[in-house]
Image 1: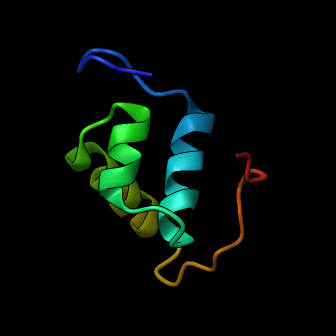
Image 2: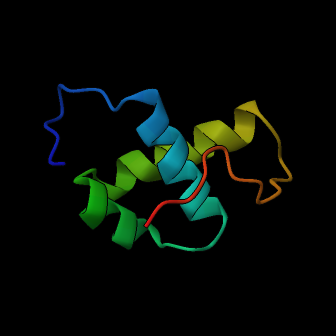
Image 3: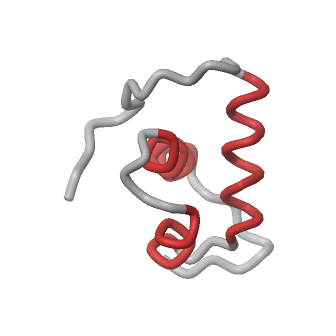
Length: 67
C-alpha cells in the first residue's frame, strides 16, 4: 500500500499502525515499510494519539490483530 503525500490513510489503517507500534510488536521502520508511509508520518500519528487520548497508553488493541 504505497501512498503519495496527497492521499490520506483510512482511519482503520491509522488505528492499526498506532496499535502495532504502541503494543511493541513493530518498529516505526517496519511499519513505514509495510504501509508505505514515512517514519515522520507514523511518529506524528503516534504523537497525536498520545496527546489526544492518554499519556499512559495501555496495550489494548483497537482492532483484532491479523497476520
